[in-house]
Image (cartoon, rainbow, N blue to C red; front, top):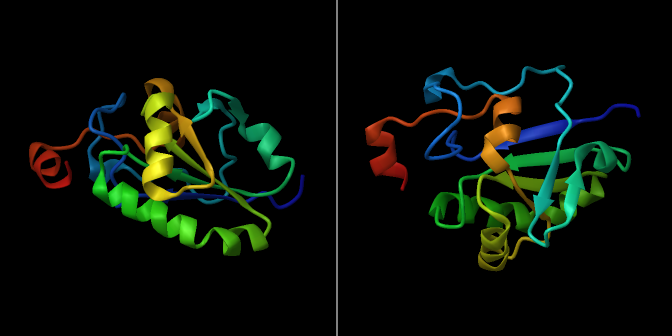
Length: 146
């Protein structure tokens, strides 16, 4: 595989209401440029297994981390990604969106946003932890973003 590009898009810098790793939002930086992306498998909205390793065989993967179908900021962001999907595909990439929501809620998000890309269940924040994007929100952040 040559020139694999993984772009991690964070939604407003906020991942989840409860995180596995005790870290503030200011301490979250994700993976550094040039770091090999951790491989993972995850269940999608159809209860099928997605493998990043397999997906990368076809080309670059754009990863988005979002909080859930209940988050208005996340909904708007995924709608905008959907609006740009043909451009992303024309560049040879595919899109996956990762959330701590269980698969039954991924379908709600897909319907709400019109997302035609894969929505993945990050059970126990394992993927977000591996990518260094989990954090524990402060009380004022909970009030502002929920």
